[in-house]
Amino acid sequence: MLLSIAELVALTGYRRRGCIIRWLSQNGFAFRVGADGYPRVLEEHVRSQLGGNAFKQRSVPNLSVLKKASVHNGSPS
Image (cartoon, rainbow, N blue to C red; front, side, top):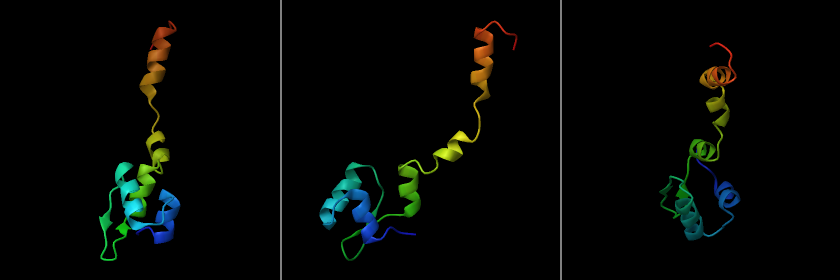
């Protein structure tokens, strides 16, 4: 789904189309400009840009860190 104009205003803090587009560009958000001049931004893209998938990234533990810690503490691996 696409962000509404109200959601774009909430995200960027701007109401004018040109200011919204400039903010999106400066902050690395992908968008396309519609026939009305407003940018079209996917909700999924905003979530990924703002760390919405961070939980998924942390769901797999990095066990190599534990192995390295046990070697440094003198414990056998």
